[in-house]
Figure (spheres, rainbow, N blue to C red):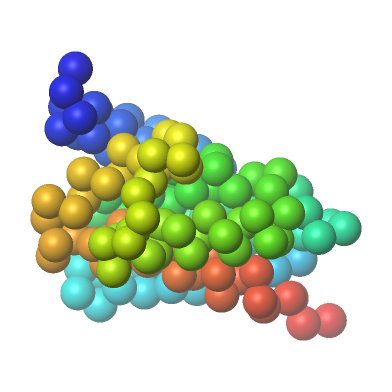
Length: 142
Ligand code: ZN
């Protein structure tokens, strides 16, 4: 299977059966993100304990790329420390928007490098990541 076929298959499978999808009963941090170019609209819910992202869920609606990217992101950031997550988010963002570095060291997420062939869809791939960063910084108010 070549990289492009792998990309198509991963996008389709995560779009059809997204991981960590839904609103959890409890969470400590959250954020809402919207990509007006495509209409992608997501909520991210986190449980952060002792500086570790113990749980991450997302819900909302959007295109296949945005949903697959959110799904892959939740898988890769779960059980990471806040600092590790920040570093992964920065690497992903720098690669997608500035073409700096590469995604190989990020494991499964690297399949999203295929989005680079469709510049109009980059915002679809990054919306959940921006929302994640915002969620980490936004505790639920008491
Ligand atoms: Zn989209």
